Structure formats: structure tokens, C-alpha cells
Length: 134
Ligand SMILES: CC(C)(COP(=O)(O)OP(=O)(O)OC[C@H]1O[C@@H](n2cnc3c(N)ncnc32)[C@H](O)[C@@H]1OP(=O)(O)O)[C@@H](O)C(=O)NCCC(=O)NCCS
Image (tube, rainbow, N blue to C red; front, side, top):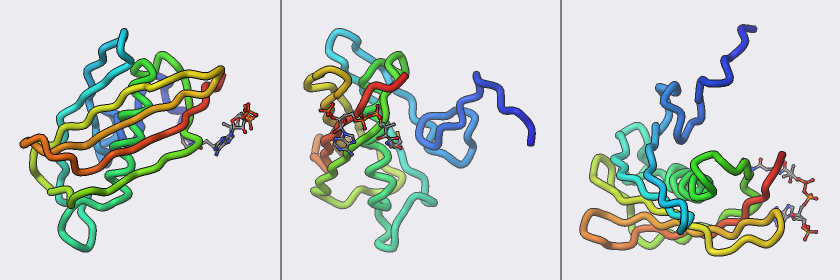
């Protein structure tokens, strides 16, 4: 089995080296622990309805929350993730993904994320609990 270089980011959500993944890119506002990203989902991420698959939407929320911890500066893993699906999420349309930290208690990070369409309509919102790990 060949060794993977540590610098190679194969993350399904944000890894530029993962050709099958979402390749999300975020901009980060450190003092607010806030991130945002513009996303356009390809057809292969659709569900049976022809709209985005619910698991992929959860992945978007999860990654926005993860990145709001400092674009990888703080290593934390998801313990809980709650997604409220408000409206169907279209494929191949501009989407706006945001994530931010609401509080930190010891190693526990409480996070939120939202997905909007280009008109500002809320499509999905998430709450998460992450744990800082070594
Ligand atoms: C993170 C992990 C290694 C545990 O680490 P740990 O240092 O042993 O953490 P502990 O089990 O001592 O739990 C730490 C705290 O988190 C809480 N906690 C653990 N899992 C939890 C969960 N799923 N939901 C809510 N709270 C949880 C514990 O109750 C504890 O709280 P306390 O400090 O108030 O008592 C283990 O839970 C894990 O690997 N989980 C899977 C994470 C994952 O794969 N996420 C998806 C990919 S990022």
C-alpha cells in the first residue's frame, strides 16, 4: 500500500486532491469564527428527487462548521449534527454556505451552519457539537 503524503488533502468535502469530492473552498473571518463558501453541486450529488441528496447537504453543513474552527487550525471532530431541511436544494445553482461558532466550553465547540440560495432563501440549517482532539 503506497504511503499518502501528509500534505495531500483527500478530504471528501474540502480536499483539492479528491477528484470525486466536493472540493469546497472557504473564506474565514477569525475574530468571528465565521466561514463562507459559494457552492454549486454537480449532478452526481443529487438524490432520487433530482434535488441535492440529504446526506450531501449534511456534509456541507458539517464542513462549514468544521472550518469555522479555524480552517483546520483547531483539530476537532463531529460528535453531533442536527440538520433542518427547509427547502429542496437545487443542483447546479449557486448556493451560499456559512458556518460559525456560537460557544466553546472546554473541549466542546458549539457550532451552526446555514445553506441559502442566491436569493437569500434559507434551504437548510444545522447545529453541531464538535470535540477538540489531539
Ligand atoms: C472523539 C472521541 C475520540 C472521544 O474522545 P474522548 O476524548 O475519549 O472523549 P470522551 O468520550 O471523554 O467525551 C468527551 C466529552 O464529550 C461528550 N460526548 C462524547 N460523545 C458525544 C456525543 N456523541 N454527543 C454528545 N456528547 C458527547 C462526553 O460525554 C464528554 O463530556 P463531558 O466532558 O462533559 O463528560 C470519540 O467520541 C470518537 O472517535 N467519535 C467519533 C467522531 C467522528 O468520527 N466524527 C465524524 C468525523 S469528524
